[in-house]
Amino acid sequence: MPVYEYWCPGCKTRQEILLPRFDSEPPSCPKCGGNSLQRRFSTFMMQKSYKAVYDDILGDSQMMRGMMNNDPQALAAWNNKMSGGEPVAPEYQETIERMERGEMPSVPADSGEATG
Ligand SMILES: [Zn+2]
Image 1 (spheres, helix red, strand yellow):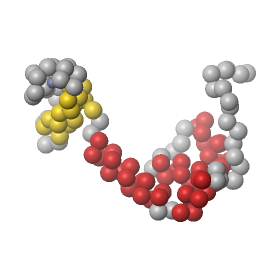
Image 2 (cartoon, helix red, strand yellow):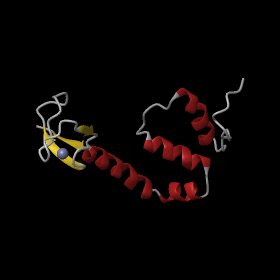
Image 3 (tube, helix red, strand yellow):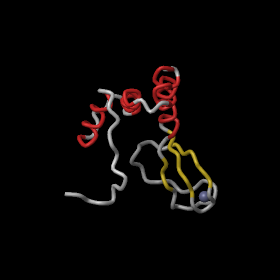
Image 4 (tube, helix red, strand yellow):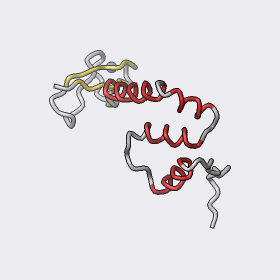
């Protein structure tokens, strides 16, 4: 049975509550009885996977050096690692490909302005 993490705004405490299903009704707060608990993402799963990714990156001294020097290829490699091999959004694909070729892509200074 999975443990879900809830935040209780009533008593401002974090509660870890066992629920039979992910889509179960939110329980009431075991501390104050409030029923406005907000589900948090289960952090222990994410922490584990992110830690593995960070360890991987930190263990790659060549990439770390490249990132320190704003090396676009290192940034592209970092992006690949952080995305976990997921396909990047189409609008980033070209940027990533350029970085992998060693070009530093130009970033629009103000993304709020629509051009064209
Ligand atoms: Zn509470």
